[in-house]
Image 1 (tube, rainbow, N blue to C red):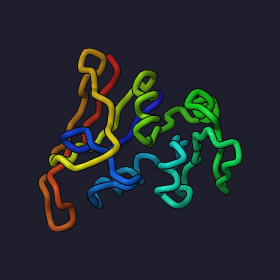
Image 2 (image 1 turned 45 degrees about the vertical axis):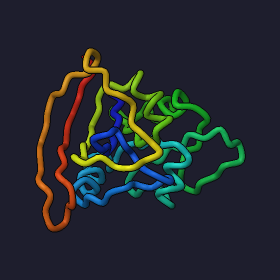
Image 3 (image 1 turned 135 degrees about the vertical axis):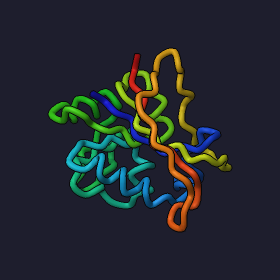
Length: 160
């Protein structure tokens, strides 16, 4: 099972200037819980935005830069190599960014998404979810509160 995990806005926004646009602690907490003890696959720019490997996970970084090094990470040159490098994990997670999501949505089995119910100005976007290929299987809705500035939902889709 290959799972894409992402937080996206109403307009499919992912981020701007290689950063998240919003701060929703509940989403970050859930992300940590869900991905811990798994392989996480991400592009180089996503890794650089994090600044260091995510703890308690095998970090796999996709880059075309043959000289790129990141201590404690597995470096590969393609999504296919990343999936091969994570074959011992029954459920690796793909963390993005936009270009990796675009490739991965063609092969993923599951989408684990946080929808932020607000549009944002962005320069990176999640691909459109083709409802003829994906079925929503669960949804939890949450209202904004003192810690989480926007309404949001945790939504799971599975490939039909």
